[in-house]
Length: 193
Image (cartoon, rainbow, N blue to C red; front, side):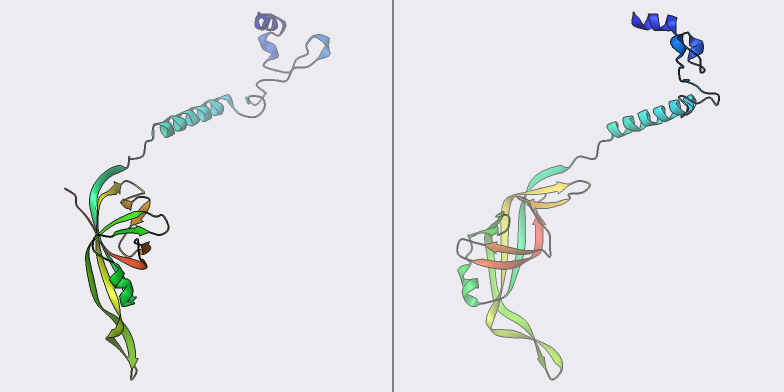
């Protein structure tokens, strides 16, 4: 009701220019001499701007990134610990569980263990020679885990054991019930069946 009363008091001609109202007040122009709304922007430009913003918001709201694919598969890993004292290698046994220190992620069960004399570089007469170490050994472990997560997607593709992403070349601080050692991931195999 008040809107209708105001329209009667302020006819349309007052919106298009500066005019005196009752009591000597002046009203600002909605559209000035240059065709700008409130003296700031052309109404056509304002309409185009609102249209572009609305289309942009609609496009962004319809965007859906490709979903991550998550599959649980058996994972086998080959790990290498170099230049260990023999007592550390002897404390690891087939059937033990191996865990990563930082996240305490379960890496798997030791299914194969190979111990070889450690190979070290020695300099003799200005040449580097690869020789077998007299005391230390290299330890190779093969682990198997039944439920590794294989994730494929735009950003997080990989093999995860818990929250730990496993990749060849990773160096892991690990432990069993009896032993703590530093291992390097030599191989990762996933059973895709």
